[in-house]
Length: 595
Image (cartoon, rainbow, N blue to C red):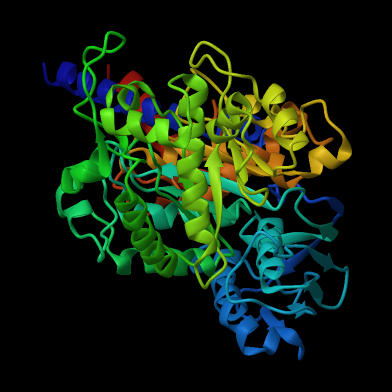
């Protein structure tokens, strides 16, 4: 009986040992790693020449220094010195007790950063982000840029060239000459459908910097909530936010703007009107139009779009915009203007009388003129501010101009093209809209093909990778008016639990499309670099979701506090294999010897 019990116990031990053995990843490591590049850059630089000759970096002696030039001016140092310190932390990630000595290797001792132009406190649409980077076979590496913003992009590239081999930080001899294809490369985040706390916004800004995305379009308020805490109109958030814990104070906003600035990212707020304003009406009902049921829409909201007939509406907006302009540093403010349903205006006597006074017919053309009148007055408000301020509007404002034949919107207003035509939305295709917008002389940004809130089963980043802002029929002059694009993430089904993973690395595909040359379009060829970049973001603390079966050494810790970095073998190391072999062998001997 004792022998039988012993056999059973040994059998269970063998089963456990064998289970542990087969879970060891050594047998598929090479196959998985074949899918992942090493020391590649995302987004792909404009021009890059790299070799197989490698150099080592010594974490104890490597330094990043600045030349005695513009890089040492106060304005440049304000940005570049913290940037150098930040990237030094990203260059070396192998734990000290796992590092292998580089003695005897060809070692790169220094990176010298040179800025030859003038630095500005804040990035802008006109900022120069170009840089050149040289990693020679001997001597020091050099990074040259016109501005601090270009130097930050070059530091990101240099950090991505570094990879790990057998406990050493390595990089290859490389020469890069780089600049972005488009100046406006953005991610739009909706924080009204679900409140997204500042730490998650900050994490997204880090990911944007790792992808050289330079615009954070903050869709802060909408029908559902008004989380911006206005000191001018406290009841906007006091009654319009979900709770008083779900608000962004002026200090919160300034911290986000400052954090973004230090990474060369512009923060453009959107306060959408005259539609999408239900939350505004919670604290200021007189701001909105009182609706009556009509034969067209029986269940119409009691309060609808902004009441554009009242001068008090424009006084309100002028004071609010003035406060917004002081808190947000960028010269652009997104005014919205999308999805305004005219039925409410149609049902309101005050609006009808105003339209008659203005000579606007009670037709679709007339209501298009009415919204154009409203947006025109808002843009005039912006133009009166001491600090230069300009507007961005959704494409409906331009489309209304076509309907009404009244092109009163200033040409320095940017048109944001977002509509598309498929199973999700029945609208005009962007390749039909962009020719009209640019033919009229307006600059445009594109979002139609990059809606990250729509998800598919499987790997969907290639479809974002294939979309191009210049995919329309137009002259070279028209295509120059398309200044870039944005990847929007609307938050009906997104909150802090999934916002970062939903964005990344899918937004990385958009980042490369907007930075890299147009002829770089092969998603299959880009996949090994995407795998490395996704894994690199995970290693840096970004919850970037996987894009199919793959191997990443730096798996995310389920506790969410830090990354779990296994040993060089990918699990327990070679000693772990030896121990498992001995245990398995002992089980077999004891089992067959005793039973």
